Length: 191
Image: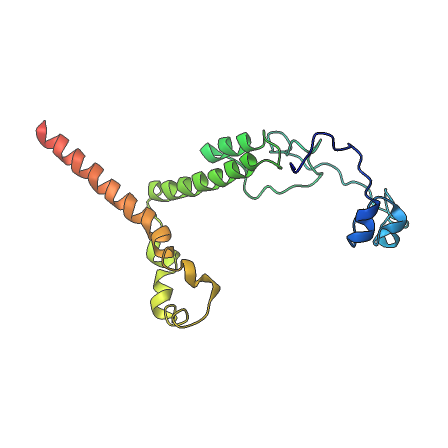
């Protein structure tokens, strides 16, 4: 017999389920809902005096979820969108927050922003220091290895890949820069 027969009624009788499964259908009747006495009525709670604050300036061009009709009156401005990562973030807000595309595009935008920050640090003449800024030095000076070896830690199962994920991009960038420099030198010699 198939799991969903064609002659199954659209509105089955669930009274047997209510008796057999504890909690089944608790939201059907408000009298059966365990949280009903604690729930607040719709609208402002009695005795609350609150007015919506006046709108903060700078609303134009701000990202806003398409599930909301408007931005809240006050919002953060510590990291305004800009550059390629800002363009990517604006694309994410075309999708609903319930879709994976929204969040995956925002994750990609974070990676783009990190790359932009690394490029900016090189352009300003103060490149990032992967030895001190990734915590590699602390591994040697603050008992990093001994605190993990022999201990039953939850992160031991992925500890082997952490150096690859942290150091891999730096090694790849160094190799790419070396190959590009080598190609530039060979090109200059041929002229």
